[in-house]
Amino acid sequence: MSLYSLADLDSIEPREIESIAPTLLPIGPALESEQLRPSVWHYERGEENTYHRQDQQEEFYLVLEGTVDVTVERDDERDVVTLTRHECMVVPPESWRQIEAVEESRVLVVGAPNVADDAVLKDASEQRS
Image (cartoon, rainbow, N blue to C red):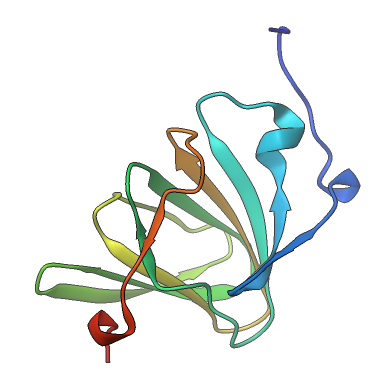
């Protein structure tokens, strides 16, 4: 392994992922990260990602631009946290979560450990109302 790895967001090809609204910039593969799974998500106003939790990964969110509402739920507890530019939070794997853009936004999302897609989706009958 090299001493370090670098990536330039402008040189990373955006990806559209089926059933997930925001555009993804997959930083992890460019950096060849072993422990982290970093990405930058670009949301248009009103876009949201899929309501999910992780099997193993905790997720770190840092708003680079804009404002997002993050819904977090576990057991009978539910909260909506509004994050603006340069605010950040960590969500543990077992908490359900969803990010919705209040305005056009870019969010750095880092999952750890770096495991293949371990998102768990709720059945439609279990979705929040």
